[in-house]
Image 1: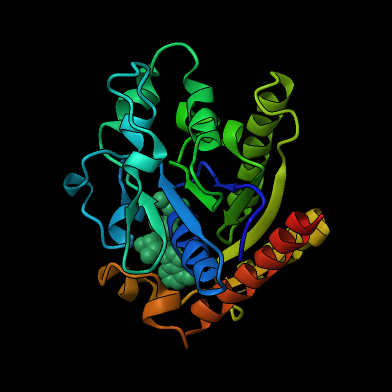
Image 2: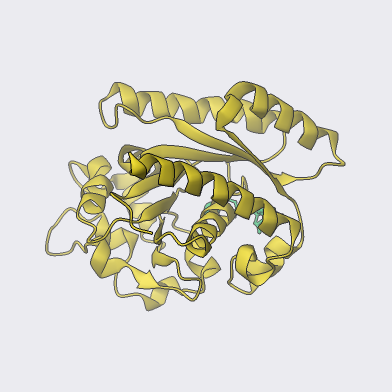
Length: 264
Ligand SMILES: Nc1ncnc2c1ncn2[C@@H]1O[C@H](COP(=O)(O)OP(=O)(O)O)[C@@H](O)[C@H]1O
Ligand SMILES: [Mg+2]
């Protein structure tokens, strides 16, 4: 289907292991399966989203690090940096060098550079930005560029209270006019095990807190790390697994919103 304009979703949560990368890869691959053009931007120095889609970050000529460069001579456009992957999702790869930008920035205007780059993307796409496990410069750049935040939350009391910190960062981005409309648009419970009371409590609390912005649970299953070891999204490698079906349900929900939004 044709999109009227790109839809940018920042997948963010400062906690490592919350399921950001797994969700980014699988929702991008899921929306591609549903017929939408998708791009994943890997903003994490660990580059797990890149390897998860079968791309060795050392093999690309330019990635997210180059896209964020201050100097126009060193900077790459998203069109120059994007590479095809076997999943059908296009990727702008992560790299260990992103840690320099996280620590030092990349000159004045670092926080707007991803947004500017996205505006120049040749064709509209659904763009997922896989954020690092912190609320530093790279996550701020993603929050500045995004139309909405998708927050994956793994079961636990600290995980729920940790969401308040993400919401504070979003408030700061809004208050500083970096992105006046940004808010959490979707929350999912990841690593969900229905036999476990902590999982059930987390689901109930997130549902109560976020109402129709709560998009469901992703089952915990060994199929997910198995697929990661094969450098493939579980929605493609093990499509009959519970987690793959759960991700496809969330992808359907997102696709309906995106299609609804672009019809207007
Ligand atoms: N639904 C799931 N079932 C089992 N393992 C999962 C699931 N989702 C994520 N994982 C595993 O949990 C770990 C952390 O997930 P990841 O997506 O890398 O989190 P983050 O990007 O937030 O740090 C990874 O090893 C991943 O394979
Ligand atoms: Mg990650």
